[in-house]
Image (cartoon, rainbow, N blue to C red; front, top):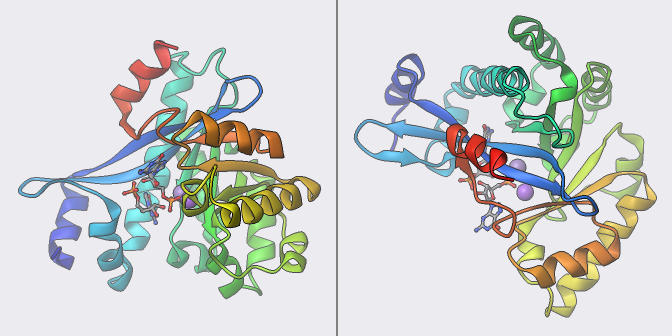
Length: 257
Ligand code: G
Ligand code: G
Ligand code: MN
Ligand code: NA
């Protein structure tokens, strides 16, 4: 098990890294963005996924400095890609960052984002933030104002793992949101599972009706893509498009398109 001290040390020693998984537009095939996925290049244990250390970081409040590192790294990368011309001719190419509830619920989170943008010379339009339904429900008093501030900074706000939580339709319509990401637990059961079909189709149609963009995550087959697209799903992420890659692998992948 990963220890608190080890995690703090990893942060000061710069052992963390972002991987990037591409997202494409259904109609044009253009890159709409990439989800930033945190990795720890541990000197002894090798490359670690967030599941191995996020819960420790959250328990010890190290999630705040770690989460801010992720934001800074994403902003710096978004700027570098533009300076290198990598994004040219490729659609919006936003970098989507996963937030921890500890970050979002902290008073002044939008100010942190504003500061990170100013420090890194990045535009809010280059970034997207992924929140879970749980985070929106838990923070019912502050969430609407924070979301509004973030969107005022130009950021796209999306709800991750949608369908696994308990957000009511009424609640969703009241919040300033841009996007829903359908949980891969539903997508993986397509195209054959009738239950997954019913749920996924209903979510897509509801979201489109509310003016939200819908991204399907965990798309592995052409059959899944086609079915989701026929219901109105606009963006795709998953092995069919591309797996999570290191920054340099991702850059090579983009140039080869
Ligand atoms: O990349 P992987 O499938 O191992 O990610 C596992 C989980 O870790 C996912 O739920 C993902 O949202 C989460 N995750 C990935 N990167 C980050 C991050 O930078 N911050 C937070 N809080 N969670 C992340
Ligand atoms: O909870 P969250 O949605 O942030 O989790 C994202 C994780 O899902 C990423 O770490 C990524 O590795 C994983 N993922 C995305 N697409 C696929 C896929 O097509 N197959 C598998 N097995 N994992 C995927
Ligand atoms: Mn995510
Ligand atoms: Na998800």
